[in-house]
Length: 221
Length: 227
Image 1: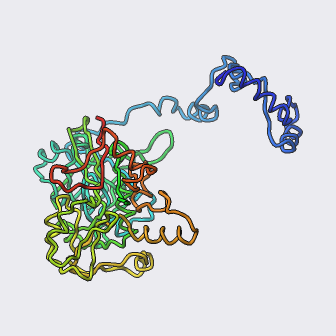
Image 2: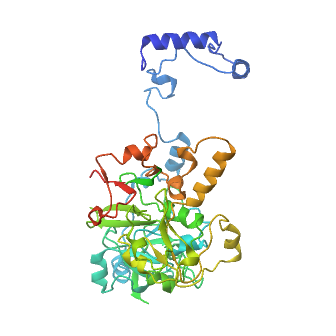
Image 3: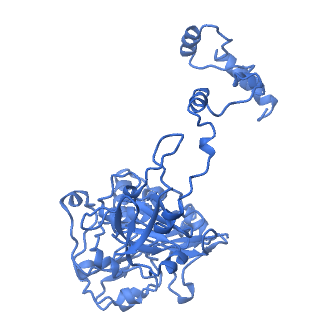
């Protein structure tokens, strides 16, 4: 009893006085009619320590993965897939595209309807501080390996497409990765969409595009 | 005597920037061209400044929202040759745009860099023009502008209280930044009225003001981060 026996007793009496105690019904429709008529329902003898009340499994455990999904995964031989690691890039691809692209959504442009709002586009981010121009973020180590300084305009190139952006050095970025916000465009209207660079990788469970497997390189623009 | 002031709890600030955007929307703050922004001419009466520490994966950041400090001893007033900037009886430091000659002495005198110069006249697209706040005048080319603690809201709140025949309540007058803050990091009210939360919060052991040693006596207090 969370609030003590005395409170629970009074609470139960109050529920009974209101007529909210509805003994079990075998017929749901009748139960529902009574519930609507009385305005509420309470089960005074509900035992929340009894797992059989919420679990249909014989061992009383609760299955977090629905049976239907388990059947689907089993039939397609994907039972272990959600937990398998991301496939590693081939050596040749790693040489040509040594960096991993991490597209992300800006909180200021999260709704997707405000990308033309000048107040937001002028200063879309506090970290790093940028104005108007689409950008990508790299760590200082990655920038020095590439020989580019903060503020340099670069091409972000994948096997599928490329776009132009300003390079910003941000210490919160993992080495070897390039964080790229989407829903931005240049002041002249040209697109700067990192999602167009994504490879064909798919999440095996959902079939949706895998966003964090694309390898890219940066070139001076 | 009323002394309007603000308390900003740095532990609660997440750096979302909502205060900046709300301020720009409320006060008809014009955007500047990309090349001008690169030169540091973007106008942001409320500016969230950030301080980064460490490298990945041990990166820490401290956000500090910075409006005008509305100093009790404001250096900007002392250098203005034409009396365009002033402090009123309730401690709000204001700017009279038609009087300003654009000398920018005040912007240079302000140690908090809270004043902004209009290098060009504001330009509004037709859709933006429809959204302008009719309670706030737009600023022409060649004048200084700054945070006003949204004092147009104070005038409106006073009028409403008078119509309702009651005293002005704490919640009646809140600047846009304090109203919008999703974490409640910004508290606003009368620093001398002990029924207002700011009066209590300014006595908090964590309370401090920026550059107190300059003697400017800001009315914006910060509750310093515990970490």
